[in-house]
Length: 255
Ligand code: NDP
Image (cartoon, rainbow, N blue to C red; front, side, top):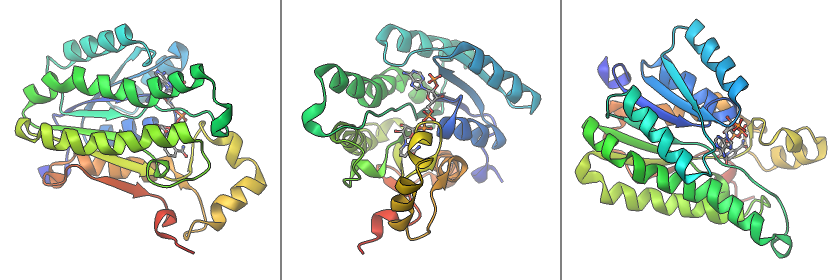
């Protein structure tokens, strides 16, 4: 059934070598999409591309530091040539964090978090817009966080970048609806990836996280990627401007 397939579609996934981005590449590929991804680490990227090719997935990749404006432009040029100028799906996944009390952040840390988590995704949307429009059916998904709508002691800059992503989701959904581009966000709570390994391996911290989570466990990357994939499917054709949590009930748990 073509409503539940991405066969024939093209996708650009940022940061596909580990964690949530990796799970998204696999999920979209299993549904039939051709994918271009990127990361900063060339050996790891090549290793992943080889594994995916072995699984029969159509995945290409570029080494790209997404905080660099010229490198973002090169990434889009590459994707445009691989996909003949047509892109159905853009997944803005790359994001990072530095955890500190607000009074301790330096100007450099502020700029670095803003650049990675907000500016890079914003510019990727600008660059991808003509390709998404040219494809006739476009879908953008941001990987936000529950930190974009709730204080979770992950640091105020991270929260501000993710809150901005949630609003950007609404603006682009309305502005680009006429181009048949839908825009949504997925907001995870703690998910087992390399980004938070150091936190979740601390038993005391993990215990506090789990005690606030009705489902009494953290999430897995493939529990986030399944929603990302759904939002890109023809089956989701009337869903736009939404931020949906994948959080085991955390964000609705008042007590
Ligand atoms: P990981 O750190 O595990 O993976 C990040 C991926 O992005 C890697 O492939 C990494 O490769 C790549 N990447 C990182 N920085 C850059 C960069 N500047 N340029 C290009 N590629 C880059 O992160 P997660 O999978 O955990 O996080 C993905 C998204 O999910 C982020 O936006 C994060 O904020 C969000 N999120 C994660 C949660 C969690 O608990 N894990 C919870 C809520 C939201 P490399 O480093 O080699 O470049």
